[in-house]
Image (cartoon, rainbow, N blue to C red; front, side, top):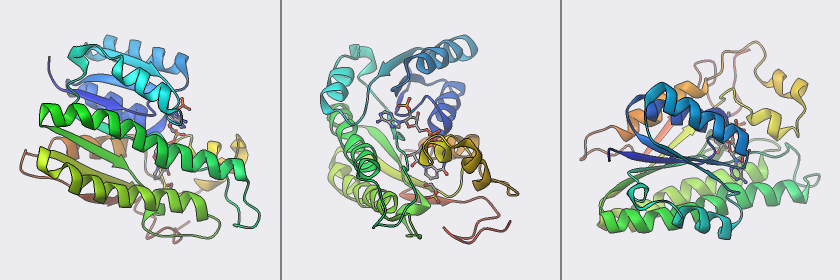
Length: 251
Ligand code: NDP
Ligand code: 8X3
């Protein structure tokens, strides 16, 4: 069996395009997300287009039992995961700390931090057994800077930044690479989700600019995963050319 990548949040945006990019390069895939139909469609597409093996796992990363059940249920040939892309995540809301909604905070903390931890804990056990592996965490410019009303989302991505560093230290003795990629603005379903389905408001985020495409991030993730064995990209910040930092955007 050739190389295997497990990508969380593959039903949309960065995760979906990362699955396509890895399939294009001959990887067999484990794709995950909550939306079953989208997973099935992507699986069929990847098998047809790239003749790779694909397993789709439908689970909510916030539920540890679902995560462990899905991951430990993988057939043994799929347990030799070479690359884990911790991508599933979201921003919910854009409000001041005093006006923020508790359910938004909980959703972001449970998905972006706890979900990433659950998946990593289980997959890293196998990587340790196999004495190889590469974990690529999707952070954000929001994990490097804090912007107005970004409070809790920024806190979760700062946590991903810290976890990325911590994992790298803990997994070093086992030959496991740990990397993060931190994008600026990428046009996906991210803003639609952030604004609770308000597509008009989401569209305005990318009006009159050329944002990054999910394909740009996918290609960069694959590039990170395909460096020689002695090279690790610890931490990569990637922005559209029209964006200088979290808040300075040329429109
Ligand atoms: P999308 O909304 O297009 O995709 C998000 C993915 O995460 C979906 O596949 C979704 O799958 C999955 N997901 C969300 N919640 C859960 C959950 N509870 N359980 C399982 N899967 C979940 O957004 P992006 O592609 O833009 O986002 C991907 C990552 O990139 C996120 O971590 C985001 O924070 C980060 N990022 C995005 C940027 C941007 O500007 N777009 C910039 C910087 C970082 P499903 O709904 O089917 O469960
Ligand atoms: C997504 C990018 O700037 O909306 O992480 O936080 S931003």
